[in-house]
Length: 324
Image (cartoon, rainbow, N blue to C red; front, side, top):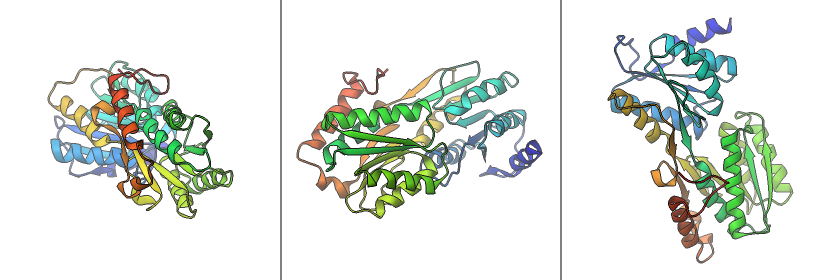
């Protein structure tokens, strides 16, 4: 029954040019693990898909698939329909894509936050921990309580690495920092995200970061209700989600990354490889909220800029990984 429903959904999920494309057309699909209304991870990928449509004239389609079985089925369905590229949006798509790719060698499966090249499965690695390090530096300098917190959707390696960067950065400006971390087990439950944030606030946390997609909407809601509690966005500039409370965001320019790969494929210039994006690429950045920079202590902006430069040159190693 699930397979039938997913097949029906795929028929009606095309966006942009809705008409069926000829077999030789450039067709690009995106499978997300959650809602594209999350104002972060999935929304960024969907924006990238739209740019691929608008810039390259591709016929595009998107579907949301939350469970591992549905994710693999979506990858296979798109490949069977002849899509040129299928983006599996998240670390969890790597192994399902490898299984699907064995049957569909003509489709290129691109896995965001993937692990390795396996045949026609290629990863896009985003070193978001380089930006969370800078966010952590600011949090460590601004905290009045000496306590920071992080809410993750699931305990996946890229999210853990982002947390480790956040903590390492905070220790650079406040060595005695106390940190709390919670993983919700999902990316959708905004109520759970809010409760996790409130629990930390009750324990004295006054600087909050996340990588929880739609569940983080609750975290921003919690911050808005509290005086002197500040939050840091993830994967997009999220300053609008809690005006006056968002110090900055660890930004990932997903549209730029997706468009880069899609253009190479369309122009027959693509070769399977690990594509890694860090601060030097412009795809990853820490974006400060100018409305709150007057709260930064003297010299902090210069320290953050110096750390950014050191990460790019490889003299500062973040979260135990060397910058390529």
